[in-house]
Length: 473
Ligand SMILES: [Zn+2]
Image (cartoon, rainbow, N blue to C red; front, side):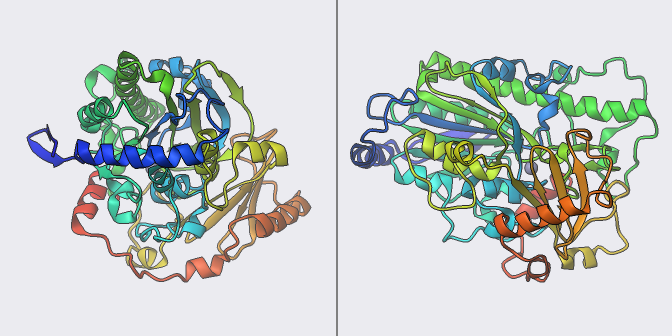
């Protein structure tokens, strides 16, 4: 049995013998399943490409230069973007971690896979297939390295991974193990889900990356923002300081990602590897009166980056198709010649063929939790909803309340930042979108979700501790 020692701890990894057995089994499956599907996207002959998912939690699309940001936050991702499909309109299915990553893994909307209500979302049901399961069944060696919190094993997202581990919330905490594992597995198809909470509060980048407002002269301590009794910034300079610290975390994540990309190049497997970079949700900086995420579904929280570098490495363009995180599991499977089971999401080719133009998002707080914490509210987190849902097109966004009624409507052609609610002037449009939501959306009634029980929703203490470290509760 191979062992890896990191920070003085010993972690068990799957033995090479077990990997080899897996690979032999997988290759038998591949010979059967791969007929006629190889080489479209540059597979090794008869072997599917490696798939690496780099999940940068809490990363707003518009804070990357490849999405138009004016600050140099991500030089490594910029280079990757030059060799990738860059999706300009990828939207999350939620504005917080558990529902969004569960949608990515299952192709389902939050109220369909069930992880929706903060802060006790429950556990993913075992009858819902995951991307990792499908790839493992196809012979992939699989590893999930994650930052803990709401991606923890306890929520069921580890299913399908031969190993699903966390050695800290940051990418760097899992980096050595990540590199070692890639080196071990470079000879056969592997699937790596590598997730980090660096960009998540409390925005505390190492000094060398904390370089986006070096002239800041104030004394605002960003950590104060994330305490229940914390202080909001008093002036614009303090507000910009918060954003600068967040940008520093993006730069730090980017540098660690760069290390892995360089290792793939050194091992000469970059051209055998599909690399998908994405986030689960963004972060609000007072665009709608608050900081942080979870509470609303506006653009700053649901517009996420998505770039895909194919193994051949020469497919580079911007894709403006409206795509949801729920579309990614089926789409990734299609790209590597596999079929994902029936789900809400569509493959990119289906989306383009059908001219599908709707994406959906959902968020909510457990009713019991709001009652428990009644009278106790973070200054920057007012008005927490029991349930909020949206249907969005290229042009429109309709916000639907917990009683399934239209609550807000935005015309994104003229109001991309979603500041002017035009529900009253365009009620016919809202009614139409509401009917499409009913027909094509999650198919779940708001009142059913609101009344759902807390069954299976107890968190163990270790998970609670790690969530508290991330600023929750
Ligand atoms: Zn998240």
